[in-house]
Amino acid sequence: MLATYGYRRPPMGIRACLSRDGGRTWDIDGEYVLRADGVQASDLGYPVSVSLTDGSVFTIYYFTTGEDRVTHIAGTRWEP
Image (tube, rainbow, N blue to C red; front, side, top):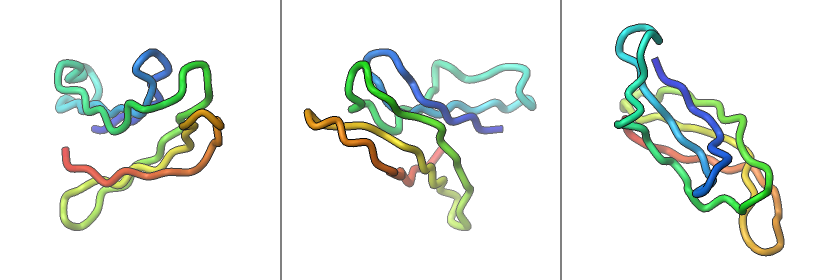
């Protein structure tokens, strides 16, 4: 089981965590940091993930970066 989430404490970004027992416990020590470049005190999150045929995962979310604080849709392709 996979959970992806917005991480709204420094360093702000998008993270993922796996559970191998149906959600009873989560591997926090093995947490995946998909992004860690979010702007402090801004908005980000609400990720949605999908498994791809090659075993990788694509996670899409909204994110705010840079001094201009432009919010945009972004995605990360990653391997658990």
